[in-house]
Image (cartoon, rainbow, N blue to C red; front, side, top):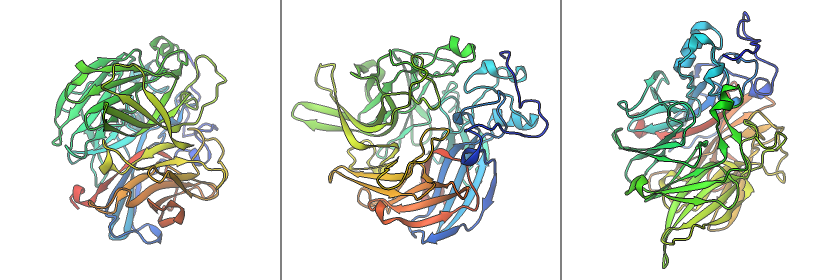
Amino acid sequence: MNDMTIPFATATGLRFPDDIVFRGYAAPSRVEGEVHDLEVEGQIPNELNGAFYRNSADHAYPPLLGKDIFLNGDGMVHMVRFENGHADLKTRYVRTRKFELERKARRALFGAYRNPFTDLAEVAGEDNNTANTSVLWHHGKLYALKESGLPYELDPNTLETLGERNFGGKLNRTFTAHPKLDPETGECIAFAYNAPGQPTRDIELYVISPSGEITSHETFQAPYSSMVHDCLVSRNYIAFLVCPMTCDWERVKKGEPYWHWDSHLKTHVAIIPRKEGVKAIRWYTCPKVAQQTHTFNAWEEQTEAGTTLHLDQFITESGWLSQFPDIRDPNAREKPPFGERWSFDLDSASPEFRMQRLINQIGEMPAIDPRYAMKRANHFWFGTNNPAIGPMLPWGPKGPPFTCVGHFDEAANKLNFWYAGPDSAPEEPHFVPRGPDAAEGDGWILTMVGRRAENRTDLVILDALHLDRGPVAVVKFPYRVHEGFHGIWVGAQALGW
């Protein structure tokens, strides 16, 4: 480990630093427990039976190095179970190897985000996976995911950690936090980068069958080692953006952040046919420096000229500078993402493609009706801010908090908003259809909302096509759960309830 002061590592008792990541509403919650029959304002729709799972980064111990970034907290999964108009809450840490070692020692043992050179000698070579980013439901199993480690399987009813999974030894050391589910075939399309645990140009591509078997595993090389956080999958193609959020192992060894934004590098797009695989990969170079944050969807359009592949996603022209620095300009400010559509004429030999503004509104954490994944969708939901409706909230440890949930109806070219209220911050929206045969968008949006003045959390249910009508129901938590990243809805039938 590097020679540096460790102000909290050997202290008796616990004391978190007075820092933006560890104070106020952002402070660790660390509460594992259950609350049956949560208080409800309004009425939970009778059709809403199942479970909402979401993952968060909730530091179990004060950071070894005195400070830390939001992303490095321990995975804490929250489950809200809906049954016949009632809602129950369960929260539990993912028992990763890191978590278990630190709980036994009663202090932090691992250092900076994804930097083994800052760990204590007693955990040298141990896995620092926090399993804190998202959750996956596939082949009847629930997994907690982080892109720097392997999946951890959880019991979907108790949230008990069942163990790390490598799919019969076919996964190396990492697995994406954003796999894509094919609603027609039931397949899961997934990938991994930096699979050895340190930066490489290799990106591994997997297809997982509906029964949970890896049926395809291929590797291709990117132009440079990049944070590949998300991907896009259409009916017949897979697309990756390689963006200039890059890692240099020598800088990591010196104790510098794992990622740096380097605007001197170009942004590239890889398009891979799902049938032919990586041997038919085609590369494009973006005419602007851009970072993909998260994705809505990919879909194909047949025209007289041939096949056009459309990629709908949030794009920013800076990296995630609230977490990682700009290597060229340490004073650079993070730029907001906007919804963009990038269109590729696949039957043309031209290296160019078209970029257009899809949603003329800042936003992040995109959602669509999952039944329309891999084909054209018309309805788009996202977290956003709209100062015309309500004031912005102060900058937090992961950037400016949302104050609104937005809905864009592309056919009507119309934006609609729900404002969460003063000192309230909604998180990622999730669409749940009213029923299997409901029209696109006919259903509900679920979003966790931080009631910051009350230091408490709600789960809000909205009419997906009429956000501005306000909540259908507000499920009130009696305490604050930690701000989260990504979640999923799993219906009662799939869960066997």
